[in-house]
Every structure is written in structure tokens, then in C-alpha cells.
Length: 568
Figure 1 (cartoon, rainbow, N blue to C red):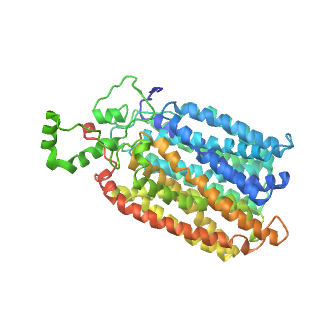
Figure 2 (cartoon, rainbow, N blue to C red):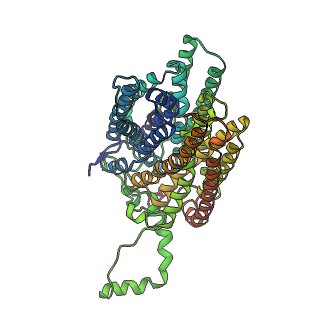
Figure 3 (cartoon, rainbow, N blue to C red):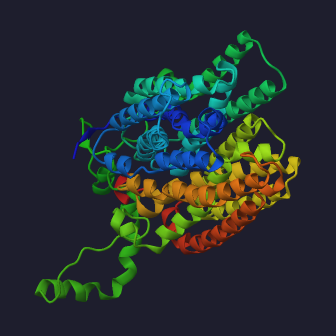
């Protein structure tokens, strides 16, 4: 296994977080499918089912991240970012060659494969930045996950602004940008995404730094929505368009203000407690200020914390057990981890909580991705021919769900020790309501339902990530996280291909066209998806009840508990 040198100091984690913001925006490239899908359909003469299957390829590539999950335990983060850049270049480059007719006869199976390769770059990008930053900020997992996935949620709006203002709605130019521009950005930033030494105690300035980063994220969201609405109402000149894009770039760079401020004010701030080299050092109480060599992922502090809680489970027979061990009457067996400790992947998958979390997530993101992949066709069927505003609305609400749920869940998990799965339950209930609004077929409810779906979609993403690390630890977080994300393509295949597109093509055939118009195009689909989301909310409630004792132990001190060995 490759060993990594951890970067010391208090500024590097914030530099890495600022770089991770850009990489997360890059990892949202799969959301662009709605922007170029109609162009792809017309140029290549695809029917709705063929187009939907390409959308599923999008989801499969983005979500099948078991290989990046395994690689993050072996290779440094920059290597994962580099592999993602290569996938992005090859995949989107091939799609551009197809739609520009440079390769006029690309087989359908090859087009499907190029979509998988293109969006698989997102799995490499997201795994690199999420695993690294969750470990760099182990005491603020919910907040960090909310920020990073919030920026990823804004990715669709960022690409929409670039598509509208820079490329003037040219799908071919957008694909060329994804093939060349995104890999260049990510290669330039990959050095800054690196593991750093986690703090031994809570930084009193950290809350303010996170609040500033969240405020910057909100400012970017407001700007993106305003710009999208402006473009929908008017056509700005080239000078105004490039000015708006420049402002967007400045807002994207704003998280860098935190490490810059820390550099300027470093001599005025009080020195914090020493930072430890890794979670292993936290557990052992050892620390070495020299260049300590550690792997990217090591056992999380929660493993050490909960041992003390669980050690009392069998206190009545401790003496007898020790005597029996000494006399050779019984053999010592390795104790299985308990919830909150570090699990291997094989130990995690046999737990009921693992599958309750997986199905709660799957039954929400599957229907959500179905809406996202068919958003353009849903709009056209209900009389909204330009899906740009719908996609921007979904992106904004997706961002609100991701960032907002991170902030709210972090507050309640610290103050009331409420499991994050409770917010997943509320999100699934809201999603079920949204599908009923879609089924009504009214234009006004179309925008409300899209907003509700975006919020719910964002909450599910943002809650699943820290929950997976809190229940099963950080040691094998990359593999466990990417297995959870398999719910995306499986849900897309079941609900988008076999349900939505099949019913859509049947209705379109009745109208004698490949385009379906009217409420009946997706009505049955919406009713089914509403029931699916409702069932998911029941599973989330069961998971919440089961996890309440675990969160009471993890957060009984008002924040994520540190090992006793770190108390000075």
C-alpha cells in the first residue's frame, strides 16, 4: 500500500477545501445531459427510449465508483483526479466527435460506452475530494459534506450559465468544453487536494470559516439564479455576458479567502492545540511533528470513542473470561465492530442498518434521477419548450437541499443528537408530494414540483454521505460510499428506462410521433414514483429509531467525541 506524507499546519485543509470546490463543480458534468440530450436526439435520430438509456449510461458512469473507492486507500488524491481527467477527456471527446459528425457512423453501443466513461470521471473526482476532506475535517463531517455536495449541486447552474452566456446554447461547444476545459482545470488543481493532519481539538475560528464558505456558496446560488432568469427574459450583449461569467468565477474563488485571511492574520491569532498526524495517533496518544507517513484513510476517531461505551456491554463476565483465557479454556476471538466504529466493507454489508440506509437512499434518488433525465421531455409535454429555467430551478433547489440539510442536521445532531436519517424521511415525504403535483399536469405546479424534487434530491445526497462515515467509520469510507451510490444507476434503470420511457414512447406512438404532448405522457409514472418515495420514508423512519442510541453516544458531549488520549 502506498504511504502518503500528511501536510501539517492549519491552512492546508482550507486550501484543499477551496480547490475541492472547483473539482466538485467539475464532477457535476453529468447534469449537462439535459442541456444536450435534445440536440443528441435530433442529430443522431434517437427515440425516447434510446435517449433514456444513454441517460442511464450517464448515471452508471457517475455512480459506479467501487474502483475509485478501492483506489483511494492505495493512491494519493491527485492520482484519482488525474484518472478522472483522462476519463473526462476521452468520454466527452468521443461524444463531441459523434454530434459534430466528425465520426458520422458511431455505433449506438459505443455512444453508450462513451457516456459511461465520460461521467465515470465524476466518481473519481468526487471520491478524491470527499474522502480527503472528510478526513481533514473529521469533527465537521456533516458541514463539509453539505458544502461540497452543495457546490456540486450548483454545478448544473454553473454549466447552464456557461452554456447560455458563453456558448449561446451551442450543445456542440459545451461538449467540447467538457472534453478539454474540465480536464485542464482539474489537472491544474489536483496537487492542492491532499490529506492534511486533522485538528486535535475544535478550532474556535472554524465555525466562522465554515459560515463564510456557506455564505459564499449561497451568494453564488443567488447570482446564478438571477443570471439565468435575466437570460430567459433578455439577450445580454457579449460584453455583459462575459462580465457576468467573470463575476461567477470570482464567487467560485471566494473560499480561498479563508486560507488567505489565515495567512495574513497568522501572527495575531492564538496558537491552537497541536495537530495530530492521523486518527491512529489520536487513538494511541502519540504524535510526531516530523514528516509522519500515513495512508490516506486510517481508522476514524469514532472507533476509539465508542470502544469505551461498548466495553461495558459484558462487564458481568469480564473476570471469568480473563481467567478462562489464561487457562486456555477458550480462544480469544476478534471482536466485531459496533455501529460507529470502523467497519470493513464485508462487515458493513451484513448489517441491517447498511441496507436500510441503501434502500432509503435508492428509493429517493432513483425517482429523482428519473425526473432529472426526463426534465426536458416533461417540460415539453406540459407546454414548456425551453428546459433551461427548469434545470436552473432544479439545480438551485438541489443546492438548497444539500447545503441547508448539512447545516440543519449538524445543528440538531450536536444539540439534540437526532440522527440525520430523520431529514431523509422528511425529504422523501416532500418528494412524494412533488410527484403528485407533477401528476396534476398544471404549468404552475410544474415549477413547484421541480423545486420540491430538487430540494429532496439534495437532502438525500447530503445526508447519506456523513451517515455512512458516522455509522461505519472512515477507514473504508470510499468503498462504502461508492456502493451506496450504486442506487443512482439502478434507480435510473428501473424507474427511468423500464417505467418512464416505456410509458412515454407508448403514449407518443398513440399520437403518431416520437414526441408526446399532454398530461398523460408521464402521469402513471408520477403516481408510481410517489408511492416509491412514500415507502422510502417509512424505511428512513425505521432507520432513525435504530440509530438514535448510536448518535447519543457519538455526540453526547455536544460535538463529535474525541478520544480521551487527546485531552491535555
